Length: 254
Ligand code: MG
Image (cartoon, rainbow, N blue to C red; front, top):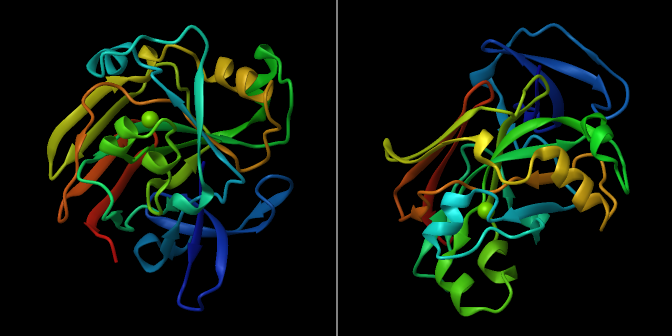
């Protein structure tokens, strides 16, 4: 099932689900109890919002060996997490804005895990129970600032640097899904999620040994090789098979 957040002409924010090209409203809380109503609203008549509002976004550095290699870095022995602020989240269709402080903003296509219930010290074999579903993320990065700054808060944290969406797919197996990133229709990244160094279950166990995970929190599982620059006027599209496509135009800072 595909879960969305959306806005209609009444400007109110709704939860919903998508069947083919139709949207149905959801009554209740997607993290607790809810009921689905019939899907009758054409998808093109609603404005998609980012599918969740995370309390935090935990991203994993160098979780694909070929990406670590393209930056002359080693694959870490334990997962290497960093945080992106919730203020960086935008929906599919919204613009990534190039900040004036950076000359080298790059895309990073990533599978994103959406947490479904609160947990701390989650055991590896129970990690599955804490997953609501999966979505697509672009871990947009100011690569020049990542190199010049000791910490990555600035490089990873600008507004619009966390496109998420278009929806949360609750029926998805991350074992072997092809992820493709295109910029203006040219393929930049293509890899399978089977090449992740640390599995989704291992990441949940590891992160929850540090911090409490809350419903709606998002884990970005790392990017494969092929990251590259974005410029004003580009359109970046990330597809993960059996989830969908996250698409964002790129514009100058507003
Ligand atoms: Mg990344």
